Image (tube, rainbow over all chains, first blue to last red; front, side):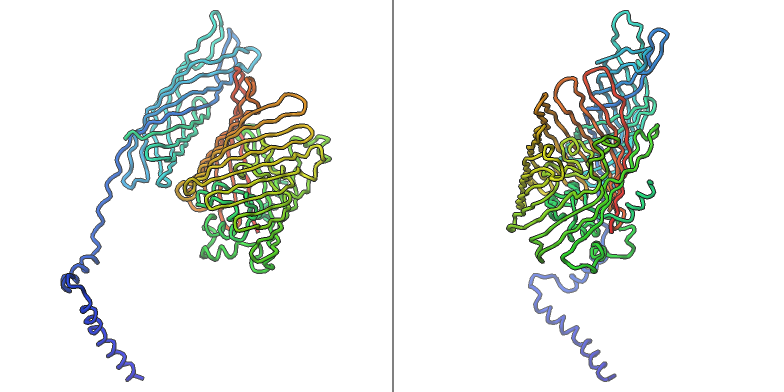
Length: 227
Length: 383
């Protein structure tokens, strides 16, 4: 048994150079010398560091789309006081500056926001039954936040909008009806979903809870990458 | 009682919802996973295996491989004859209007049924599918005299399927009507307001032609034969879908039906798009026309949209927007429903859907209807 093992071992030892000789005969004429190729192989095995991925460039994006929310506004008429359930519809726009992290998964988001629309409502109490329609509102604000890329073409965001709003009430002359919130401020939390539809075009969906207005605003926007 | 429903839901079910959202996994044709080529109803063996091996989370799977999970996905795997594919299914809905306010939880057993697919040949060219179970009395009928006439134990589907050729299938029996995106949310405007809700099945004949790039389905129906003859909606519907790119299908649907009192017409277009892996965008819009035999005809519109994002394997977040107007005249409100939530398949044979819904009315008057909030949670487990 030991003899057989020795024979097999000898066959193995001598078969290596024989095989190398055979393959050397087959090597093309223009191939590098064995020494050079061995050196190349050694270099390859050291696995040179992959060139660092260039950092993703910062981006400026604009978005625009409709928004809707409802809120309760305090109203008074003379000495009577009450609440008015109002509904605001309008168009919101933003310029958003995005700063990607080094691993490109996270983006810092800073946007300047603006918008306009109309508010309407009717007093809920018999004491103040007055109603409003088509009253212009203007809104401006700033929204910092974070966006996380969930796939190459989709992302979710958690943002914190700071908003200031003016309502340009135009009441009938002589009316003692006085709705509140001519100008008001709110801060909120936004959950956003962003989907890339083409190279520069995105679908942006968001829901925002404005704490000081106690209102939940929905927004769907078209977002465009400016650079 | 809620505990009883929970236990029931835990003990019974088998997945059988339709998820056009799975185009995000590059599954664009429902026939891949369902016996019914339009989706919904019982899953075939491939559908069960796919659910186990690709869709559901692996957190509770231990050291089992995806292949092992797929093999164990059936009902009593390996113990039943190959020609019999039974299942048990239940859905329990927990609903709370105005969460955080005065609303109270309501628990509704939406569905509890047994079903079976009987295969007449090895190639599954001839199949009979049947289900029988409990259906709750609709909310609008509770306490009404009509509730006494409403059956709580019904068969929602029973049909025979025959594969006529390589690309043509014929179905005969009771099924859901063929129309639009067959989504799992039965309360969506695009289902509930169109007469396509979970109890609106009909007896009829379906011809389904499937090409790799397109499919066309025609449905001729005689109404629900368990209903009185004068209320049965008889008619026809059709749906055509074309794949204009990988994981992007556009479709068009039409439906016409009538009974002794009213004739219904619906026309819609839809799009379903897969994005990345496991994420999708769905969109459907259309016209709804109801013409009563006496009284004024109404023509309205509906919109359904949903974006779903796969978070990790087995878990998806989604946001949805819907609109509906029953009559496009001034004075009638536009209903707006927006929601977001989670669709999860936490483990083998389990499914959970949680959704926070916000409803509003848009109208031309100064009157503002208070917005409504609803929290819906549905649990769905399988054997």
